[in-house]
View (cartoon, rainbow, N blue to C red):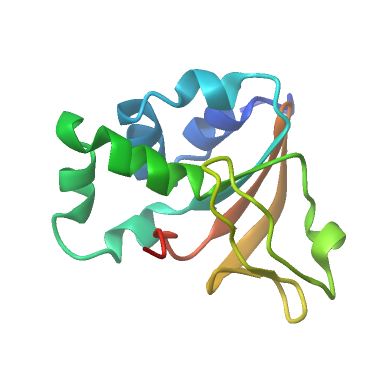
Length: 141
């Protein structure tokens, strides 16, 4: 990969550690959204985070009949606007996600999002930023 900055989807593809996330975004029909101008802040679960879900969960979610549920889960990982780690340092916030739910962001000791730890922060993209998390966020309901 060159030093050129790419959009969120192309950055995730190039990283190679988000194949499950990219497949899920594709199955949910969100590729064009995450390639649009944004800006977006994406809390991107790594492939290891998806692998930690109960067996069969991902395979079930990417089925066409579960597109609505998959979309709701994925939109929990997207916050409108570009929020860098320094923007939340020392703070606790509950921003609205692209899906309308809120997530709890705790920047008082590292950064956690609904209990998931940000393991790599501030991956700059042309239309926002990616923060890698170690757990897949699931709707509270």
